[in-house]
Image 1 (cartoon, rainbow, N blue to C red):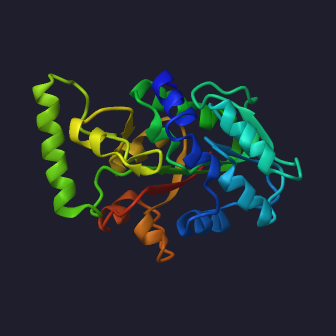
Image 2: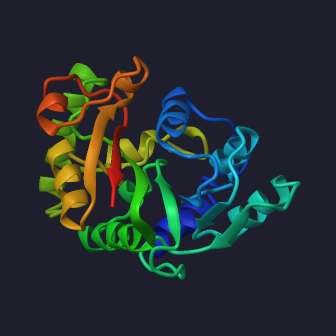
Amino acid sequence: MQTEVKQFYSTVDFDVWATKSGLNPDEKYIIETYLDKHKKTVDAGTGGGRILLEMQKMGFTSLYGYDIVPELIAVARQKDLSGSINFEVGDVTSLNYEDSFFEQILYIQQIISVLNSETERKKALKEAYRILQPGGTALFSFISFETTTGGFIYNLYLIYLSIIRKISSSKLSIQYFPYNSHGGKFNLLGFLLGKGPYLYRYKVQEAYEDLQAVGFQVIAISSREQIRKRSMYSTLEEMRQQPIKGAIYFVCKK
């Protein structure tokens, strides 16, 4: 993972991820619907352990979590009063876990979108596939490029960002967006200047193809909007007919 990203989460945004707690409704639904409480499960980019600590309360056992920021892992360990969750430092693009080590994997904090190069994103997906057992379940979420949430303002910003990139002769794809917030506050300066670090916004087709390319079988897709209505779609074609609001979620099998 790029040094710039690691530094951002260990300084500017550290307090945000160290103190976050609870599951949002879409996370809770997808976890309860597709995961088994007694199977070995890992949370990628666990931060301060927000998701795993809630899963522990829900009755999940055999939980693991990794993050590239050592300070966040230290916070997660402190919060786990039982000491039963296996928190460790790890890089999503190069993990120390053995092949097929987990029965279930969670990549639902849009961790793939944090990676700032196509090479890193593909390495991370290959690693996710490698550490999952055959027949295992993988949950992914990606920040959406084709979102309808922003409406006119979002489309206007796309034009603005493309102009900035042309003026600066940047070859960076328009799908790289400045972080929405810095330290829990709206990142106004970053948005005005188009400055990094960036989050990569995926097109639905692109995310689907990248997951398939490493071997995953996609069995369900939805954006946050449909999940909150308890709707998941089994094909890409069905999803294309729906408005995309919020993160895009994929349920996969190996």
